[in-house]
Amino acid sequence: MSTHWTEHEAPDQTGRTAVVTGASSGLGYETARVLARRGATVVLACRSPERTAAAMARIRAESPGASLRTVTLDLASQASVRAAADRLMAEHPRIDVLVNNAGALVRDYALTEDGFERTLATNHLGAFALTGLVLPSLLATEGSRVVTVSSVGHKQGEMHFDDLQWAQGYRSHQAYFQSKLANLLFMYELQRRLAASGGPTIAVAAHPGNARTGFGGDQVHIRVTTDPRLRFLTWWLLQSPVTAALATVRAAVDPAATGGEYFGPEGRNEWTGYPVRVESSTRSHDVDAQRRLWTESERLTGVTFPLTVSR
Image (cartoon, rainbow, N blue to C red; front, side, top):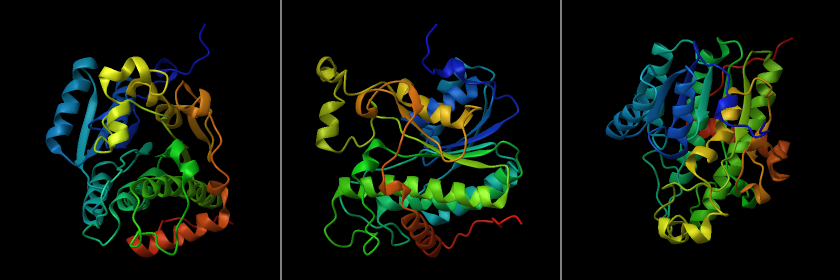
């Protein structure tokens, strides 16, 4: 028998509700597909209603009985995040899993309507705010968890607390790596606070390794490595979205997962392979940086988490 963790190892999810951001394509779609196939009610939280409808149709073609819902969400807009959170809270008073999957790698420097650098806004600040706003529905659910999707690239990331918004010398990949490091700093600090509160929710993280998706397709080197015509050269470097999404799925449903764990591919450099527990960078475990990012994220988004330390 294979010892690899595949979607067939995912336990039955009937009766559970999972919210997956960025679920209309790529890794988010594959995550939503597996969760729906295993019986969960899956809420696809995405920017484009048209693309979301197409994704739902594809999932239902594979799993005719799938229980699917949608909510429009643009993580780069704090107004959209708040509107989506209000709807989620109204329609789903109990949420079992929140998968913060949606992400962006923005080539040219741009600010959002809130004045945030777009990569940071999408990859961290939007996820931070959404998590805090829907946390009551997670805290009301035994065995619930928050899954944050980072990247193996976080190991190249540094937090520029003196210029989080990259007003000086924007570099797209460094901004992306910073945001992916921020994902892990957020996860570890959230887990610390959840544990201190004594609640039923845990925080975990995952990364997909190198996936053959359309993500970052406006970046020349990414467009080259994902070109299907070059697959005979790049097969060892990239894996399919189906396999790449397994780390996120495992983080979301593995009953043995505990708070603060991080899942990624088992292969060399964690680029490809089936999901296992992996170690994040030394920088991601910097407690001072975790707390500093949390405080700054609260200030920027205006979102505070409904957590109190149990006595």
